[in-house]
Image (cartoon, rainbow, N blue to C red; front, side, top):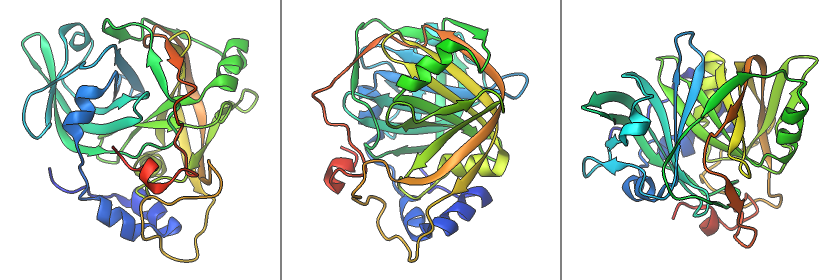
Length: 310
């Protein structure tokens, strides 16, 4: 797998945050993507629809949900039921197990091979364990979601209730060359804020590994879709629009390590605020899940060893 290359949106934020050294080092990082893919109990894909709006497709259930078609994990084969809803197009992909706090990105292009869809990845790499609320699925059979999409107003009471409880969300973005990307976004309950009067959504971007892949995409192209989940029911909401990233953490010296232990669990690096053009209430996004209260929720206050992929 070739090293990551960074576009102007990502580089500009890396320079503001003084993480260019870290980002260049991580450009060559891959990690045990095969293990993470086979252990995942959630697979999230995102691609633009006919109108250019990024939409999510979700597969949940007991692992393994995918087949690895080669030793380098550059090709993933999806089950037929999930494949039927996928097009031959570029997709951003994330395989994740919230209970194990393991996640990996797989971005590339989907082609059909008989009844199955196969993702040939151009980018693969594992990620740290931070900000994931540990949970486990209550059902084992594979589920394809969402089951339905209905437009919803930003002043809807159900939406306000959902966001007040949300710890787990996912961000779809797109690079200047049209490559979609999916990233996990987690935080304390209520970290996502909607201003119905202004028609906006915003959330803090907590200190991460210093690459700023998603934030850089938003800065460069503006396009985003945020999927916020109600894990107790398996439902959720997609909020799509055009946003901007603002760095709020000026550093006086260059950062040399991708993982740093902080005194606070959720140190804010920046903020993304976007004007919402489309909002949908989704049913049956994934299997309902149970919060594992006894499991460690890894944050920036955890040790570096606890934060690192494992």
